[in-house]
Length: 206
Image (tube, rainbow, N blue to C red):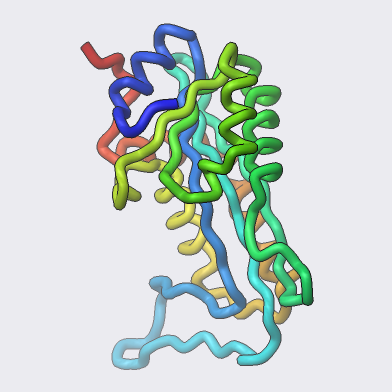
């Protein structure tokens, strides 16, 4: 496991013929995000929501890149209905299972790049990383550097796509979010654009 060093991550990915995978989390409540839309001149469009009900959807996503291969998006989501005893976020097991899923779907070694969230550094995950060192290398982004993570661009695309949605329930919201994510999965150039937007490329560092 390494702190920082995206160049190191790219070198490791190239040396191991591995996928470089950027992970990040996001959430969305029933209150729609701001978005652009058409409207009459001088009349600001208004999306009316019911203003009642609770719940949100949490998302963990991975933007996956390898030179010469189609870029991929892998994700998982979890509904939060505000019930007593319900997990408030992803657990270390959720992260472990998502990483294993990425390895299976990508069919090769993984260089994982993510932030310094405390949940990413639990003793259980550290033990998993050590036990998986033959196919998994983990790098941590510098603190306060979301602009270096292409997955942030994916979340922007998701929220832009649901910006004018007045969801009637958390299930309605979840269906819309998953629909948007699936559309992005079928658009590798969009996933590539998020990499470029972060100022990164797949060219090997010297």
